[in-house]
Image (cartoon, rainbow, N blue to C red; front, side, top):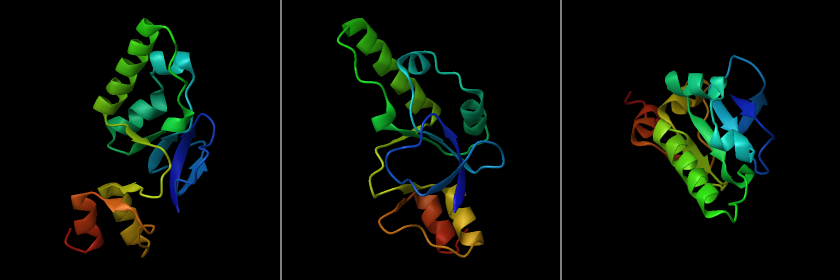
Amino acid sequence: MIRALLMGTPPGAELGYEYVSQAPYEAVVIGSLTLSQLLRFREEPVLEALAQGKPVYLYTPGLPEAPKNRAMAASLTAAQRELKNWGVLFTDGGRRRLVTAQEARVLRSAGRQPSPGAVLTPLAKEIMEGKQ
């Protein structure tokens, strides 16, 4: 199973990772964020993983509810947009999990296949087919 650094609480859905609290890991899963964490997001392990090209997933049910204050709600939307621009992948834990090229390499080297219903990026598909 692929090791993922867990930030926050564990997601309510099975995402297919073995959660760890320290290196080595191949991905990062953000299980929850508080309102202030989302507005001032600067978690070093997540930023480092993004800089290294490791996949980072944010479990969307772990996000705070949109506040009734319009200005604050707009700030939260902007913060989420910034995370997406950085490359954080948002997931609700549905069965259709995205498999990146890096994850495909790990799966292929272990002689394993992606979980049923997984969606592979084009490069991940080539890696799993042995073309890369």
